[in-house]
Image (cartoon, rainbow, N blue to C red; front, top):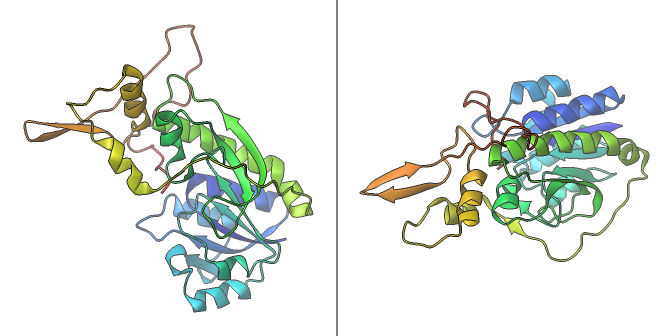
Length: 270
């Protein structure tokens, strides 16, 4: 199969390797521009696609880009942690449709920062492979995997475990997708959706507000993702940022992925 890959970061690179290991060809690559890209050189190497077949995501609404993508003659498209809305003209250019890997247990936490909201809202966490439609993370579900939120999870550790689960789910499900036997299960009603700017409503801790201990701990750990500053309070005209580190008592549980150092931390989804 000829695959158009739209992606960003480590998960997209891992999916590129899975696609090519299975004998399929990545005929075109759509990436984030440099100021928004994560691990772009690694993704380009994994995809094995040259600059002549690489397009930046902010150009997806350009008719010239539509013509270029059609010239790649893709059979199917795969989206992984891709932060731009895919317009109908691009979806229609792919005969067998586009599948998207989203790091939430849909219909919960469509959109941005699902790792944060699964902790703050105590909503189910997980990963979903679904068919794309013109909505944001609203298309029919192919497969899902729930990921438990541990008491010691932070935004960073949960994000890392969701990445691992996303790659594993794709590896298990891709053979059915390429064979044309993948299901199309409509999403159940309800759920939730978030935009990037929704974090602004929770990041500032009001020193005069009453929080339960659980609410405050969940907020702080959800926003602990070095090197990002996260939650803060303001006092005496100064802004003070907070970050939590959590661990189980000896013998009481297996901690999830450790917090990375600032140089190793993965970026949050946009």
